[in-house]
Image (tube, rainbow, N blue to C red; front, side, top):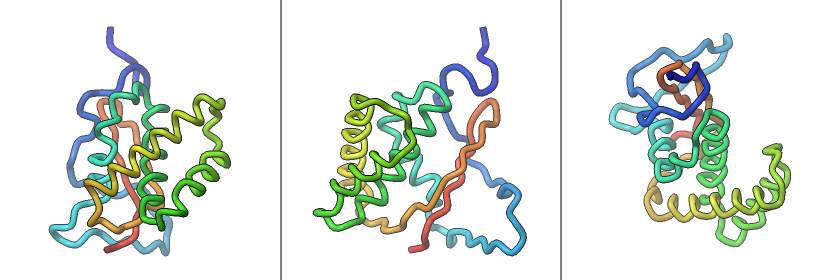
Length: 149
């Protein structure tokens, strides 16, 4: 039995890497594309969360994982002494709707992602502003807004 669009398990290959036109952009918005040879931040974020992707079994949990990745990515670039209090504050202020056990699990995940960022992505100092995930039925398209190098 096949899953209906947006339901069921996420496909093993979550993203199709191809050039696509950006979604409708409001008039007057400046869009800056990566320099030739510079990796797109959507690809970086996808690679960054890859070891934890198996935990995302549906679109909702995948969006949550992306949010945890964004939080960890940006916090990792703060001074070390500011990281934990910032993680605690942001998780407490979030609207993820989790109980205490869920909050602790989110904190453990974010801390693991911070360590991953520092170990494997230390040379990338771009900050991530936001992401947009589009369900295309067979796969997802991820767009990421970030700072430049």
